[in-house]
Image 1 (cartoon, rainbow, N blue to C red):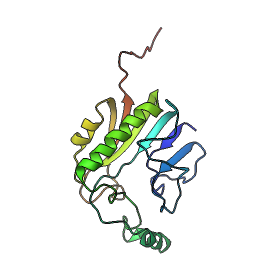
Image 2 (image 1 turned 90 degrees about the vertical axis):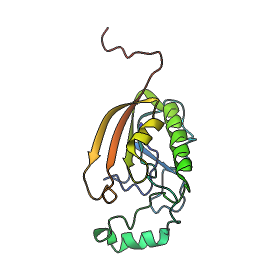
Image 3 (image 1 turned 60 degrees about the horizontal axis):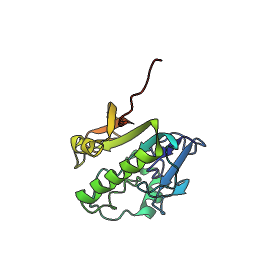
Image 4 (image 1 turned 90 degrees about the horizontal axis):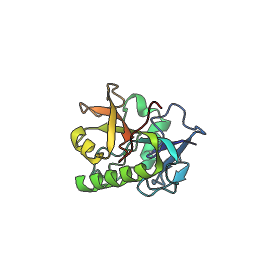
Length: 182
């Protein structure tokens, strides 16, 4: 298993919910699609340089009231997804009370990803500019090289008129150059 979903949630971003090639982690015990492992993405149980690819979709906002997991199950069961595209999804916006708490968590997570991602690995980050700009997020990822920025156009992947992105990063290797030709 070379792929890590570091914020599995209910695996809503995946077409296939169960892949033997992906380890899904999350700390939320009330999710209705359970992760492979309950783990904090800032302190994972994995060895150094274990993964080729990490997907990270952190909470994009903070200070929300606690999420009603039972209501979320009802919404999925009754297929409210067609009427309320965000009514069934857990975003984790209730975990961090302030912008400072959210930023601190993202910073600790990206440091952990530096440890568990191979030197030639890739980090995919999904971000929506709800109250924190992409520029501010990129400052948190200062030890990474941005390879690609994809603007998401799908209304099911954005929040109102807020822009959503998929970002592809690689590690900045200190004092090492990748040798392409010998």
